Length: 396
Image 1 (cartoon, rainbow, N blue to C red):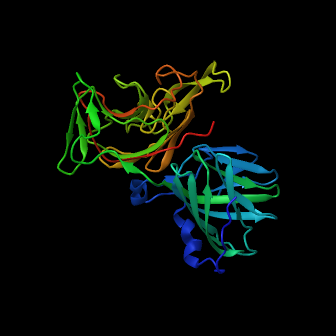
Image 2 (cartoon, rainbow, N blue to C red):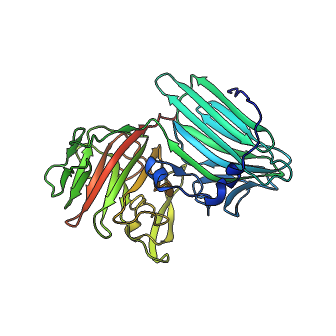
Image 3 (cartoon, rainbow, N blue to C red):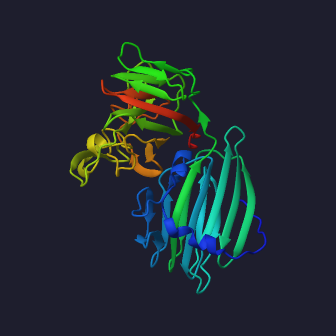
């Protein structure tokens, strides 16, 4: 458990109190910089809740009559976290971090009486897997406890980090503007040539570098693969579709020497106004890995849509548009896969199929190549700002 040092008390400023005026959104710059919303303003998507949860006036509310524990389903490594929160009731809530067997937490204090302002919290976590060392930096401004700043270290820790919110019975925790930016991302495209990448032979796509340092793919089918391989990671990159409803995708955990044999994060900016698209989503028992059935999902996404895990789950909403740069984030951790488009989560899927060395046939946990798809003769997309951070494997 870490100790965080307290600083002098400060009251929440009026500017901070107004910070929720544009709640639960990202600016275009924030989206391009890789910030992710952990609450979309409308649903509990991306959270596993035991207890009570509801949406109240643009905030995600946990707790009430029952003790409530809410786990973020996606795990990260090094990141910056920001949120606004308000605790109503008799007791404080907690923001808990778990990495392997190590745990740290901070109280989220009760709101001051007759003060409508929100508390603000910034947490920066930096993890060095080689040394097994984690450093946390906290800035928390509370209407009742004032300003708390601190820094704590932990050593001998391993694995990715899980976030949890704990709310005691009789209290309610409201959160908004809950956002996270992955850190320690490394570039895997130099903007000059295809160093570190290889074109799959015998296909029709043309991969070129523009004078602006973008990677462009035209025609298809085709496949451009990284020479490196990753199993668990956070991947971020920007796309630009140079036509209407063009089809492409980002494949990952791809098998050596094979064409587009991996999971696919879909790219296709075509959505309907109403959920008219029907998909069958397979369901498997998480313990036996036997198929238990299929459920019908109605969506607005055509051909699964940008941000989908293709052939597994469709994208939830349209965020990206043709003719505009947009950012996609893919997080792969064990059998859990998640995507964000312009910072809005689109997929939160656990692959409970039997284990396989091919994602086409089952749950593939192996390290594999990342590849960009040239889909067909109409393909014309640009890519830039490729960056990746490896997630440490979870302790066994």
